[in-house]
Length: 333
Image (cartoon, rainbow, N blue to C red; front, side):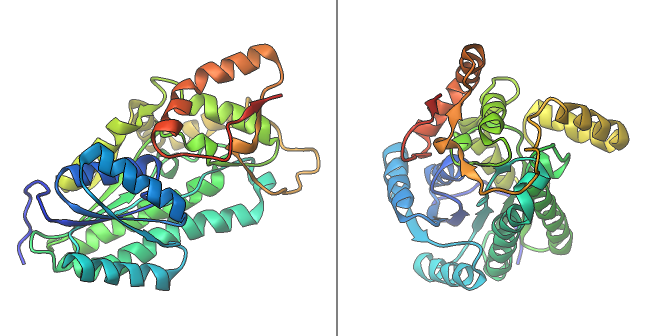
């Protein structure tokens, strides 16, 4: 079968994991706007229902939504088969589902690492293995997109579980791209930097959780350091559409990637210096249950609270726009 390098076209079947909010939601909408028959997967049925309405209002098109926990290999395989049966095949798959834990590694504990690996890496692996046989049969040649992270290229402090899982996704993407070279299938790995998706409200925080939330939500919403989520989603779709092998989004992420490649020791020392500015682990270093951002209070000190509010303003707006709905907004102490 020959591979077409033409743009995505009307009627192509696309599947997006983690498609109910944030980057996944926006990517699904971009695919739908291009005429694809899109299926979105997520764990939460209410989120999926809102996502379907959001995409319909945005694009005028209807998407399929299926509840699926990507940590369950059998469930992923079943949904892929169901999608193929419903749409007549599979042409594009974006493996996007993930979680973010923010805490010192010792405070996060081994459970955080297991959860990150199960959701980010194993979820991506199960999606790839289930989808590849069908992508090989796509008339235009299938396109497989894996969402990595700058954390896969440089491991930031207090994001170690996330970085470990994303590094495994990077290796998976590079390996699958090599193994499918010359075939009808293309594999694209996209490594975004910080994006304004509103994910700070859904991220999980440990250690000094409120202090961790304060720095993360501020940086993730700061212009220049972070990227507009709409633009990031378009870059993801363009990369998969054009069959790019690897794309790193945001200048800061590209700089970090190059720096680590050229001078890994110096880069690691620099991240060590950055770690000294972050909240210290609790004195006992005993792992505690992680807490989602929407349940945490903002800093008590007035100037710190004002700085945090200003830094996360764009990200709070993104949370409202991109279905990062929560039981209630963060409150001040």
